[in-house]
Image (cartoon, rainbow, N blue to C red):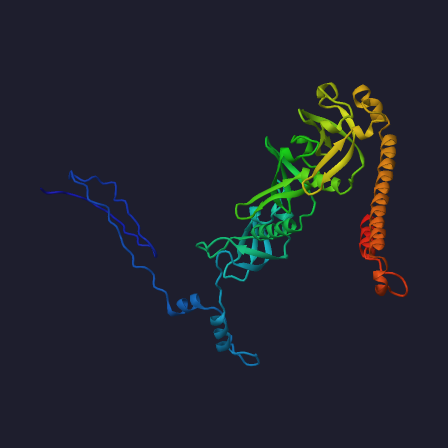
Length: 410
């Protein structure tokens, strides 16, 4: 088919790129449209000067090791000889160089700085403590490595782990001394209270609290304590307030002292009296010189009483009590116990005087017996022992025995 087409096209090629030229508005008589013409331009080539300019780094400085105490070869040998091995649980020195959102950046001499998380910055922390309140910038710390290197070569370190071990060492030393110490109550639960001992959480059973209950009112209170159980392997620490109080009070108690107490419980064989956290036994035979048929007619739980200490066991914290020694007249505890308690000190003084007189009487009687035995032996030996006399005086065969007895009774 014969086509008559009048086409006028202009191709424009810019320096870098392509250009599309729209054909003229003349319609084609053909039903098929011809594609637009696309022109491709070759990329611009850099000159040698442009390539040199692009890679130029400035004037070159010649470096030598002249005037130095070591050469580059020496430095390379020193680097190769230096070990940068940091293993888990190693203890290293580190310097705090920067605070972070959840911890601090610490320089420990590794190829990358180590990270100290806030929860690992100290053993004793208050809730909500920030890292700024736990460590100072520029401070040098003993740190324990607690992780392997991550993909960036960074290690996690801890101060808390080191302080934790040191705290256990101090606790074990205190247990060996078996001394009384003070600790603060930081929490309570149904079974007792939690105390902070050298930064460690210790359990104080409610049965070992003296004169108080494990309620929130005692939180923040410092109590005298002694150890009941120290088990570092199982992380178990148990303390007692009662044992500490008993030991302190027992050191100040002696036989014959008058003490105030409260009846805690009645048993068929007597009454238990609480004396400053200790439990003393007032045996039924020590209540009155008269016979007691019904103990509940004499005492009631919660009743305040005065007693005399007649015996004590300081090791186990036990004391034996008596009220019959305070009776002005036999049977007064059954007739008028309040009068007995009012005159307790006066009656106790007379009781001590009577006991002292009886003791001296027993000593005199024992001495008379020994001297009488000596005189009898002298009469039996007669003149047969004249040769055994010393400095003109007869030797007394019981002299040493008498002297020893005197020393025992004095």
